Image (tube, rainbow, N blue to C red):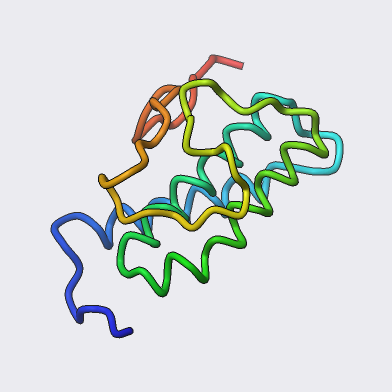
Length: 122
């Protein structure tokens, strides 16, 4: 499988922002920094990114299926229940379908792209 030399409009910028956000998060956290909501959001992000990249090809989707199994196991270990709004998560070993065919991503929660936090005068 070979990717295109040029990404679609906005894809490279969004991917770069995703990496920067992940690095920022990695700099903030420690072993006792996690809440259930934060862990769930990170696992949802991993699932969404895995599904999105898997849409680039069936073979790639099959190779990324291990990520779905890993996030399902992480949820089990952390005692996080799977949202009812994500019915496609019924099998951790399932292969992600091409985007828009069989599965729908869960509705986004949170404050959305570009949120930089709440500033206070401390």
